[in-house]
Image (cartoon, rainbow, N blue to C red; front, side, top):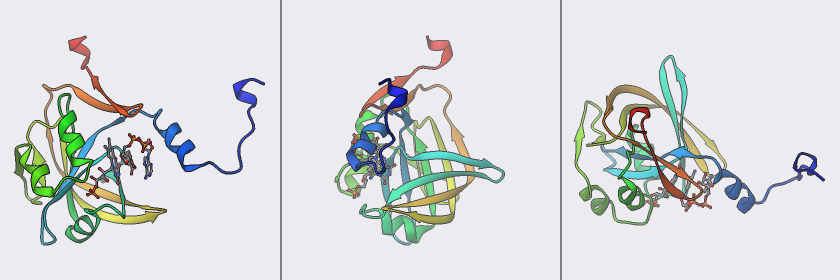
Length: 173
Ligand SMILES: NC(=O)C1=CN([C@@H]2O[C@H](COP(=O)(O)OP(=O)(O)OC[C@H]3O[C@@H](n4cnc5c(N)ncnc54)[C@H](O)[C@@H]3O)[C@@H](O)[C@H]2O)C=CC1
Ligand SMILES: Cc1cc2nc3c(=O)[nH]c(=O)nc-3n(C[C@H](O)[C@H](O)[C@H](O)COP(=O)(O)O)c2cc1C
């Protein structure tokens, strides 16, 4: 039986789904917020572009994460896409580390929304959360982009096969 003839299973186990998802390379981002509910940040690979009119991206956030109520209440966030060299910072924001320790590991600045922008990020999208949809364990945050900061000097970072990989710009190869 060739691979193409394998039967489609009626249900897919969680681990089988995760093993399959590990085959999809993705950018690594630190999502931050600051406001009346406090300051928080977490690592996310579940981020993608939705529409350019109005400029909107989505972020999937597990409702069991400690940061979830803070993002729900603040209503503003920044998507900081990580650059090559940010592996340790990504791991710090992806674990159970106290929030002050996460933010102490890098330099930040703010724009109008007050969400922390990471100095040296590949790109930062300063956003207002326009809509939230719950699916299973996660909330999908639809984020309207209000300002952008790009850093065209750095290389990219990808999460693939449960590890980090550098993405070199064309002129560096
Ligand atoms: N969307 C999410 O919530 C993601 C969560 N993670 C978390 O980071 C840690 C390390 O992840 P990996 O080393 O990549 O190994 P893993 O085996 O936990 O995950 C493999 C892949 O499955 C997907 N995935 C993992 N947990 C998920 C979830 N709860 N909901 C939807 N998709 C999920 C992601 O694409 C991930 O790269 C785990 O604790 C994982 O739960 C990682 C990536 C995405
Ligand atoms: C590479 C990587 C990607 C992740 N992507 C997501 C994601 O897209 N959505 C999510 O809810 N959690 C994701 N996580 C897990 C969160 O970063 C983690 O649960 C978060 O730091 C909250 O942890 P806390 O409950 O200790 O605050 C990811 C973790 C790693 C290491």
